[in-house]
Length: 526
Ligand SMILES: *Cc1c(COP(=O)(O)O)cnc(C)c1O
Image (cartoon, rainbow, N blue to C red; front, side):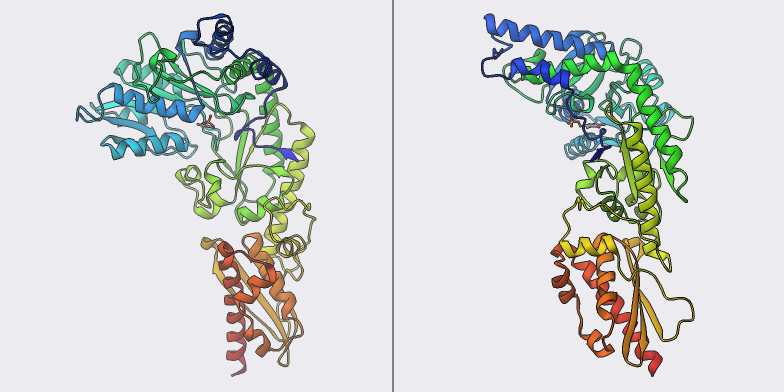
């Protein structure tokens, strides 16, 4: 398995793990950092040291770091807390937020929630590279604007917003700025002393720390004020109650210290891998790079590409032993094409045929070469199954990462009967069903000899199940009569291939294609 999904999460670093262990062991340093006795003081000292390490990565003071459970919570606390501190929604005054359409879901959903309570939110559309410029933000401000929330680095496409400029200009206007820096920390130089952001969110697991811990930078001078979203014992200066998870906090501290230490080497390593992969994959006809244009500021650790003419699920299935993400990890749980790529103006088909490659400390040049070879071969293969008269089949490795039923997987890997008959071949009747916009097209060609099918071929653009349906239909048709074919229906296809309910439409597509061929055959005979 080659893991190229570090932007979704990075494995914990060995030294981070070692640093956490003493606080996790049953006979370890188990004290409550809020307790006033020996074990408590020891835990407190570890928490303080970790706070210093996190602060060090971004140029903050230790007292400006509030521990949270991750960037999702930090973003919630920053945005809801800032509005609530100003009296929203109880004082009934208008409250306006400026953010962008390409923020992480946890920012967008927080804003949507505040809209239900009466806030007004401007979701700015980024430019073609995914940037929201300081000018665009300034133009959206109103006298009621309470907060601007903008990410530093986009998690899907690696676009870098000009937070340095924006922060200075918002400071002049007296508007609070929150920055989601989950993908920026350790990847870009961040110095909150020079860049006057008020609030900044961090996550440990994007930085080789443990999952489930993050931090919010809350500026002290001038003081950024927030209402707590978690009420309780008044921990974290009253902004976030709850007994601190000492081991997690220590892990995040160690991860940030390591990121500071390795910063230059990490960035050089990642950008070189990114550039190597792009130089290989840009040779694929029609490939599109999503996000920053060449020569523009870009996150070093990721590359997002679209492969028009290839269906996304089939591409990911064919990549088998390579873990990459399609769009963001969060939104690929749903079948929706990435809203970030759509905001850039990509259509649904192209957005769906996109991959995000993200690199880590463990990624080697050999990994990148192997990934490039595989992607080049599989894009060519899937395009061939969709259009080539006689596709040349390259092997797909047998990992079946999404767990398709065995027969679907076999037919997808081997694609028997793929292709078309040469133009002018006697007795061929062909027709197709589906549309590219619906992300499945199946073309079936039957070669009749009298009323019997002497040979059959298919071409398909679609998911592995669609391709398997095409291969099955073509294989099954051979030697049968038109009357036998007319009796085949979607239910039988589903049973033969073990097609699950949520893919029933693929079997229906097969039935439609078959019906279309038979109708044409009857018309030609009449
Ligand atoms: C991962 C991520 C988050 C969420 O962080 P968690 O710590 O997993 O809650 C928020 N914003 C961005 C940009 C991210 O990449």
